[in-house]
Length: 325
Ligand code: WQD
Image (cartoon, rainbow, N blue to C red):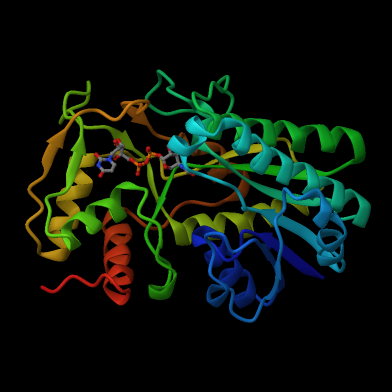
């Protein structure tokens, strides 16, 4: 039986697809290729369609024929854009999930690993956030992920879906040189982009109530994130599944300054930053408590910040914006 990966041509999805293929699974990728790249899916079958388009339901259902499980990663994921275009985010992320669940039920596919996000937590006032804290997303992106989790829960009640929600923290790095993050939306790619342009890295605020004044995050290597999906699929096969949400992080925190310093050490470049104003909506601290996933899945992130930055740098240098040293 095959495994369907929606968003399998994207940054995280392509890592999951490659890991599944290497473990001997047949993989079907469903992706609209709006950001994804067909060249990233390897030998997997690629079905190009827009999940949120209800007219595509028959093709989606056909794509699921012969699949035993779905890993649902396809989504719009830009926080700022979600604030500007909330209805479109709901249509895309919630509409896409609705169509996927309809197709899965119709096809009798009853296992789902859903890519949720630490964005469901909003701005928690704890140092390490546990899964059972009441979620309070602060933007439509996070809200759409939380609603997606509710849809998984409701389908479980209604027709016996076996689902698990993986709440990713700050995913970064590259498991393979050709699978680096092609978008420049997060800290490490944004720093490398500015260095490529001959500019200084930007720090969005150094007056937060943290040791060095910059925000703390839980950076998790995309290769570890991919392996968590394999562990989640194993979990779904078990008879007892006491939990439906899991943090995917390291439980360790790094400040923006520490990340930029690591980039300086790894690249040998001058990374003296420029301090800019705070970016609206950034929580000072967002770090995951990862005890649940360690205990229940037996999964633990293997990579630390050095490995994340080193792999990001190798992938960046293998791409079109190589920085001459
Ligand atoms: C990290 C820290 C910035 C760039 C976002 C989404 C989240 C999830 C992951 C999608 C922050 C600071 C950044 C720069 C900086 N999204 N920064 N200079 O905001 O923690 O999480 O991506 O799935 O839902 O909100 O990640 O990488 O944008 O920022 O100082 O040039 O780096 O202010 O403190 P974030 P990020």
